Every structure is written in structure tokens, then in C-alpha cells.
Image (cartoon, rainbow over all chains, first blue to last red; front, side, top):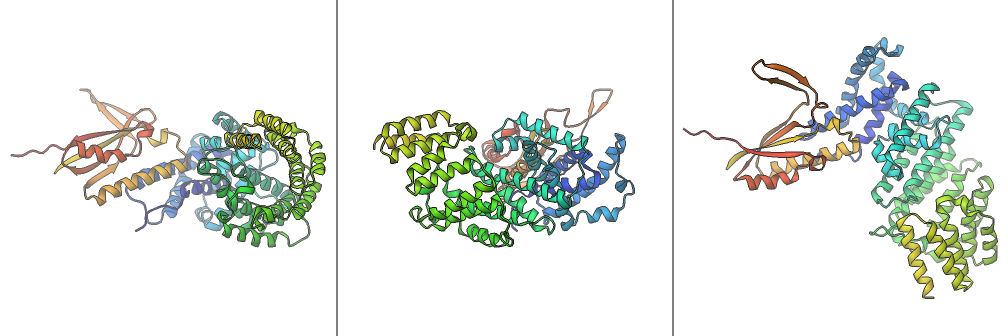
Length: 413
Length: 115
């Protein structure tokens, strides 16, 4: 018999059970619930060391169900408010909440709670990773390259806000749903980008963040009420990016730029999936930033070789993206594309509209661009001094090595 | 062939703040280890122990109930295996999954009484 468990079974099941129990006992008891669920996993680990049950998931669900009564007793002992629902102890109703469809519903409620606009964006990411995805604060801290202490503070603050503001454990309706969906999409987009663009040198961690964001957006899209064209576009974008993830880094963790990536290594099933999803995303004519970003990513993937990239099309999508969501990064990308197209002066003018400080920790991209520009203009000295500036502002080791190699290359020109 | 016991001593998992992912990985290693011993035909038995401890000490038979949280180290379980000597068991014990958590394996030979 094959006894290997599905990857991340515990982590995923943790999120499921915490969500169901929260639906039963309310968000005010989240901490007790999380501890109780954690206990079931410790129990499982100990008793499965020698023998893995035939239906691990069912075992875990039963274990969590059995905790309902324990939590109930604990709340009574601590004289905490026990929801009416449980006081009545309608065993059938509680049992029903552990059915697959209801579990999914509970998890969506948890995603929507974690992404409530009353929470700050960084707190939203931390609580989503904790309560929905089952990451520990240590894992969140190493994923986001943030101190564990800071993560703990964010989690405590998020919990306090949820309690104090009495945020309901529900999926909002009407206009509130539209607004909340935007926040959910944004949080998932950020989690994905944390994996895709991150400064993290640990490739596995990056991959897991991307995979987690993709799992959660699929959950949102699985539900009739919460699916939307924007959500599909976001999922398509993730597919397109994820298809290139493996070819972005060498085995030693060095960065390979788009131009030098081995395109045969791109993951074609993901590209096909992205294309299929994109069809659903464009069913109406309202396009979001995710639509344009997905279109740009798709355009890059369409080119068999870097040289056959359709820069005119990409420029068009970028301009549209800039129209609905002006950001200095989009401007920079526009400048880069103009440079690729040989419009040196136009590219330079575009660059001048950007304030490097607005690019924050990625301001090195600005100077990297300048260096490229001067190199094309055959002003080698300026190219070298620009790349030196880029080197003073870069923090990530892999990026630094990339820039150093580039500098060496320029010096030999 | 003799019988040896590998006794596992260390902190209780509940006290270590392990994430679900870490727990699953660790469990996988324990399972793989057990399977390896089984395949080698040396495994005679073993058990994991619940973390509650009731201790009876001294002439007055003083009874104390303790939880693993109060104890830094407890015996978490044991395996009984067949081997010719300590060195062989030591080799088997290389795969014990919890050294990185400060865990200890104590190897003891089961005494044989012959008349």
C-alpha cells in the first residue's frame, strides 16, 4: 500500500478545520480553536508514526469534530460566551458543517475575513497565511523575509481588530462584496508576487507561496458568488508567471533574465491553463489591471525566442495598464520596452518621469535601466557609473550578482 | 541475535510549536524509518506514549501528576529491534528523526535470563 500522504495535507487541513470550527464557535474564539486544531495534528503525528490510517483526511476531520465538545467545555469553564448555535448543540447541524461543500464555504468566509479592509494590508497577508493557509509565524516570517516578532505582532493586531470591530464571519453581499473581492484579489496577488519576485534565495519557499496563492484564488473562483472576471484574470496571470518560475533561476540561485531564459523549460500545461482561464476573464468588456498584466505576460510567452517578442503589442497593453493604474513600475516597464524597440530618446524621456525613490527597494532597476541606455548610446563611462549606483541600492544577493556580472560585461565592451 | 530497545527521550511535540507542515514532514520521516526497519526484518515492536505522567516517589508514595509542559524531557516511545551488538543498533538509530529538536536515543540491551 502506498502510505505517502498528499503534500501539505496537514497544512491544508488545518485551514479547513480552523474555518469550520470558527463558523461554529465564532471569531472571538479563534485562538482557542487554533490551539485545539493544532492539538489534533500533534496527536495525528504521534499515532501515525507507525501506522498511517487508510483515510487520513477522514481521520483528521473526525478528530476535529471530536474537539467540538472539548472546546465547548473549555469555553464554559472560562465563562466565555458560547454561541447560541452551539448551546442548542444541534448535532446534525454541526455535523453538516463538516461536509466538503460547507468546509469550502467556511474557508471562503475565512479568506474574506482575513482580507477585511479594516485590517492593514500587511496584517491581511499575515492572517491569511496563518488562518487560511496554516503557516506558522515562523514560516510566515521566512516567507516574507520579516522578523518573526513582527509577524506575531501583526497577527495579534489583526485578531484584536477582528474582535474589537466585531467583524462578522461571512461573505459580504452587494457592493461590499465587490469591494472585499478587490481586497481578496490584492492580497492573493501580493502573496503570489512575494513568491515570484521575492528576494528570498530559498527557491522552495518561493514556489510554495506561489502555489498557495494559486490554490486560494481557485477556491474563490470555485464559488458562484465570489467568482468574477477580475479573479479569472488574476488566476491567468499567476499561471503565466508560474510557467516561467523554474527557468528564472539557475541551480545556484542566480537570476536569468527573460532574454536568456531557456524557453523550452517553460511549463506548457500551465500556459494552456492560463489561456483557458483568460477566455473566461474576458467575457465582458471591463478590464482590470490583472487583465492587462496577464495579457503582457501572455505576450512574452507567445514569443518562441526573445528576438521575436511583439514589443508593439506589449507597449500597447502597458499603456492601457498605466491608464487605469498609474504606477512608477509600469512607467519603468514602458521605458524598458521603448528601449527594446530602439526608441532610445522616448525611453529616456519616459524614465525621467519616474522618481527613483518611488520604486522603493527596487530603485536599482532605475539605475540598471540608465546603464543599459548609456550602453546603447555607446557612452561606456556613464553606463558604468549608473550600474555602480544600481549596486549601491540593491539588497538582494542574487540581484547583486546579476548586476556585478553585467558591470564586468560592460567593462569589457 | 539479541534484543535491543531504543528509547526516545526529548521534549513533547506539543511544547515545540511545530507547524502543521513540520509535523507532517516529521511524521513522514518516522514512518519511513519504521518501514525501513520492518523491511530489514529487525523490528520486533514499539510504542508511542501519551504525554501525561503520573509519578510516584519515595516511601510515602507521593503522587504527582505532571504534564509534558512541566517536564523538559519525557520518554516519548520506544522501538524493540534485533541486532548482534550496540554498534549495529547505533547504525539503525542514525535515522531517528528528532535529533535536531534536541532528542536523544538511548540504546539498552534486553536482559536474557538463562537457567
